[in-house]
Image (cartoon, rainbow, N blue to C red; front, side):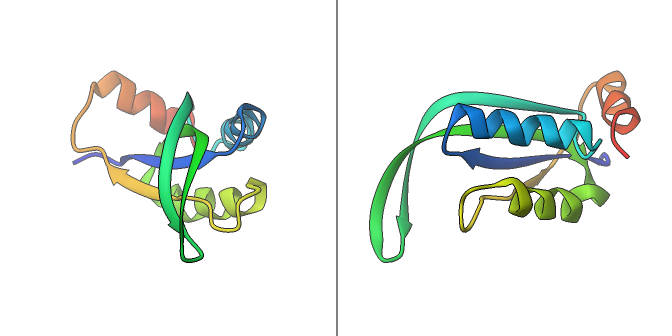
Length: 105
């Protein structure tokens, strides 16, 4: 087990994805954020099945920063309910995992 975590969220535009990614890295809440363009999401919202084009953000961070990342997403995001799901990183390159620790608060 490592201290590294991967947080997933989506954004409704490339501009918003970039804004969120830059803010998280500038605040040292994430060492890196990958933006995966133009995914198609199918979901239930307010009793209806919806489809949307979104940008997926893969946020590399530390376990203890989850709540701060979650709060930043609520602040920065245009969605009423932004996705914020944290996944454990069970293994990885020791050098890369150390880099995540060095580049986050």
